[in-house]
Length: 314
Length: 314
View 1 (cartoon, each protein chain N blue to C red):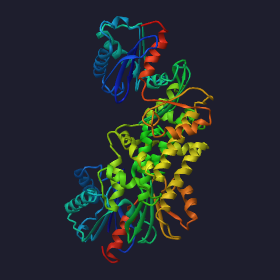
View 2: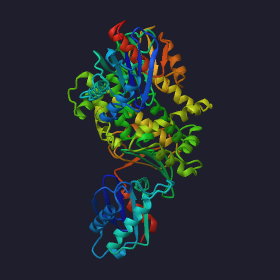
View 3: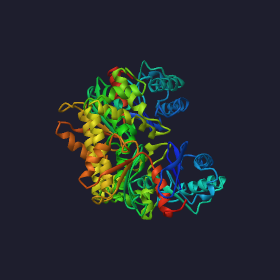
């Protein structure tokens, strides 16, 4: 069994025995988003990480590989190249180590995350909240429906990007009198390199500091600043986090949750110790849901590889 | 008297007699946003447009010139080059025609818009709502305070960009079950070149169609589609326009309006026959304000040029 978790900020692989024993080896390499990492680079990274985890002489015994990639395996995206690119890169990388497993699957990142739930259930919900945000429904271990996940410009409500943008918006509202005072003004000005701005230039320091014209989504890196301001008692920052949890719960509700069904949460905001986990848990409790937060999809990728070929295979 | 209105999509100039008679000549040239049009191009356009309106032999008699530019004359923007660039380009252009007027002022676009109010009052409010949106307070013919105008990423609430983005957001909410059905889904899909999308790819057609990575603000060009859907009775589109008017009124309120004071509105949404004018008028009526919508700032630029040197000058 070989499981691979290819995320936007890291690529990890793990091998394990089919019967369900412990993970035998893990290794990691660079980013692996199939929509942003060029195919030769992706192939090279996969080759490296697979080489690190394969036991000596064990290549021929590998019967099942499941790899989840950010940006891959999104059902319905017209003309999506991600899944094809990922599959080709993965086949090439495995071939270089003499592997041609009979079962090989490229999955969406939400699919492997969900599979980390206890018992690797086939059906349930997975909610991802990191830089972006989406709620997903799984059916038979496959992504069956998605709510939100619509990107930083027109969606990803409640995500890290959303929280950071709201932080700047509400700081600006405080500065020009549209909203209440908040710690966010001074902290964002400092983060943007304007530690003691004179009042008239403060507005423009915040507007200009928030916008990276070549990659507006980079604003998401200031999400932790809003989280800290909320922890320090700032009511405006706290309200942003409350609203983010409302929005994530709303996306979950759009998938018509069934009481007691499995719900996996993952990503910087909803993983273990994620700053929105407690708020989100409180909101979905009324629907009979209890989040199971996971740190990443690696264990789930291994579990899916196992599930694909039944017990006893190697 | 020479007035110039340099907007993001056009540059216009007008000459008039000092005593308050009719405008004698007007002419127009290309865009004139001092933050996006290079200085040599701006100088060339100003030279051309000034040459078209100056009466033969009248160059030496010109005593007052006021020019408003999008992107110029924003008090407090640290290190703002706009005003300096505009002033230098204007001096050069006038010099080429033998003009060196004793009074020469580069103004913000809101300043010249406000000056078009009847009687060219020194104090009051101007609200701009086009691609962007801002509420401004004038004191002594000068911009004294601004609410919002914080750009497409972190502000411009209620603007054309804001309306278009909300249109896409609510269409996506309808598609994935987070929100009610709306005409916007089919109309946006058609506008984005996906006239009869198969349902699973619709989400991604909308997300991808909305985002121009090199210029996200271009989404604003779809604002008229939301306005038309509202006119056709779509409740979701109507709610977007209602909320936009609420936000523009909120920005106005942040400037603490005084009952009866002048309020000029300008821009595609709040100019004469602007689609938000009626909604906005209803909202500010309670504060004793009656909007005076103007089509552009040209008449105001002429009025400011007159006001600067008093009656009798040429």
